[in-house]
Amino acid sequence: MAVCIAVIAKENYPFYIRSTPTENELKFHYMVHTSLDVVDEKISAMAKALVDQRELYQDLLYPTEDCKVYGYLTNSKVKFAMVVDSSNTALRDNEIRSMFRKLHNSYTDVSRAFDNMVTSIMIQVC
Image (cartoon, rainbow, N blue to C red):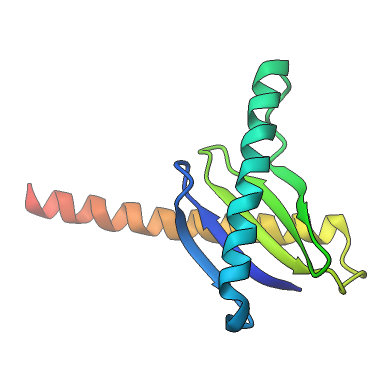
């Protein structure tokens, strides 16, 4: 499965990066940031071509001998990157899409909980 998962903010700084095994953490960090350039290129190409931007899955972004980096872009321009071991040839495109959908749903649930907590604090303060 995935050896690294990253959630990247709209401004391209990492919210969260987790990798296993941890001895390759810097390598995965580099791969994720390199793949962000590809995502930015795809976004600008879609904007210039006036293509429908409802497709959130960004496909294969950065292949290497050891790993493959796949991307996903939310409507709010938060980016998800997933590094998958290249030796896993049984992993299909629809399975990667499914993993990204689950990750996006989990991210949305956490974001809502945080927004609700901030709102309740603001109400108590005011």
